[in-house]
Image 1 (cartoon, rainbow, N blue to C red):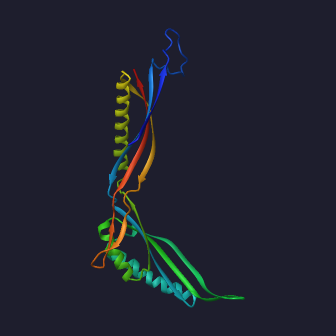
Image 2 (image 1 turned 90 degrees about the vertical axis):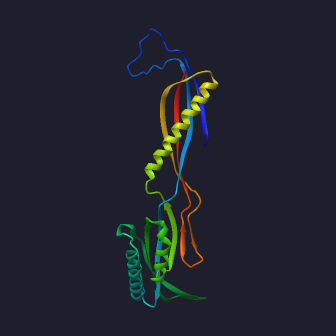
Amino acid sequence: MSAAAILATLPLAAGAQSAPSDTVMIADGTLLDVVAEGSVNRVPDIATIRAGVVTQAAGASEALSANARQMASVRAALKAAGVAERDIQTSNISLNPQYRYAENQPPVITGYQASNNVSVKFRDIAKSGAILDALVKQGANQLSGPDLSIDAMEQAMDEARADAVKRARARAELYAKALGMRVDRLVSLSEATDGSAPGPAMMIRTQAKDTTEVVPGEQQVGVSVRVRFLLK
């Protein structure tokens, strides 16, 4: 992980003079600013995939009705597979006319296309491929994703924070030793979250047995900290 350091020598503090109450007097020493990054790797345990149904018919109501029937089968398949209601969310519903275009003539409506998409959160990635196959059999004809995430993200972030602080302290000790000094104390600390750096992408692939497999890969969670130490 990269780290940067800035040194600033402080003047000797005034001896007998009193300071205003809002002024903090710092003893003589050297300020060292260190920027360090910490990270941990996690295998994503949640996959979000968008599934949808697109239907066409001569009339708008027919297209919408056919779509509703097909989507009902898709939702039933999700429930039968054990996907909770809270993990199924409608993301888009649309109904659009379809046109035929001819030269020097106004467009003519030839039918209507209805679309209904849901966002599905899979909490067991190992089972998600089989569920996707079931959705397609029940009428889903649009699939996109997956988006991967880590359920216990805050825990992973805390581990990355601890790693970043450890690296910052080690770097401060290194500089202090090289300067013939010692780390006296920490002066300040601030954090800039890097969030989830993309690891190997999650993939959807077809296995030899013609079943879909979702491969989660690995994701890196990183945190950057800026720490100021006082060296003496």
